[in-house]
Length: 391
Image (cartoon, rainbow, N blue to C red; front, top):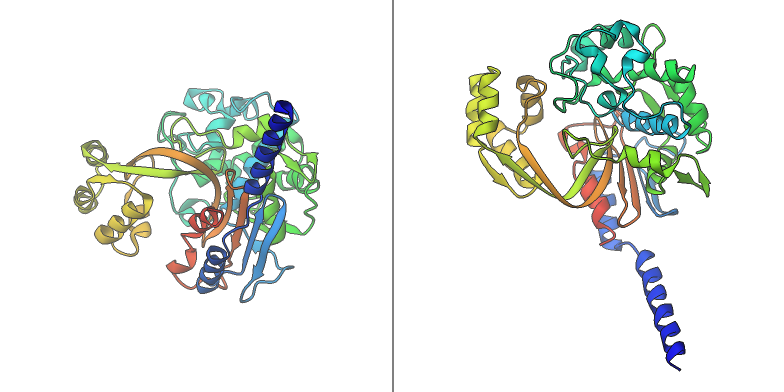
């Protein structure tokens, strides 16, 4: 009798766990997300729970067969492609020096730059935050990165860097013997059954890395599902779990970034203190900007609170103002992270892949230049809404 009771208890626990893991998403929260999607001129929103499609909606000019430019989410696709190279043993680790493929870097501090530095945004390569200033006027994005000076010692600071990342197109081709977009098409997209896509090239034929992949939303979300399932897609292990772990491993210099994927934490505390102000003054940042940052001093218990203060101090167009004044490598704030982690691919105009491992929810939102009207169309709360619909 005692043995039977134990077996029944175990069965009840398992049954309870199954119900919890397959719990229905909140209908009201899902409806709210879709209302927000329409209000922000989204072209597509797709939500999965595990391998189950929850909703696939198209708005405005969006259609199931229309490809949309994924903007900087292209970076996150390339991050998964780097995991493919790790998985296949084409590189022993991310710590391989880039100079192994470009011997001209076997001198000075550039010999210290590794693949990890490129994909963690810690290379120290000089970069202008506005790609239209240096990158787009160049006919060879790879060569532009190769000949750039260093602003910081490699591995010293995290600084979002389009210029340095474009070098990965050359690195991937050196390693695989295939142009990067062809390699991604064969090694990553083919097992995911993604066949309808295109890729922007520079004038000499290098595929863009910082952006440039045009893809259908229903294919785009497969990248998120692959990440959620630790490299598995439709029961096939496309990438080893060990390689996928590298994708979401926090960067040593900034816990909010992995291998070309943003890492969002349940709780983010932002701090603006004297150390931040002194660093700005030392680098001779515009005095008007510094004075505004002095008004920002304090502790903020959420990203929303910090952003609200930014708008109050810097105005509604605070993103542009900050980009114009904050030099690469400098910080607006210190951040402390805690709680559950979600993974985010984030592109210009508000193109997103959101992966929430805890709830097994994956969401995609896509929008093109043709549908984008103003800053509200960035749909900045999409990630938060995706993560809360299963609560």
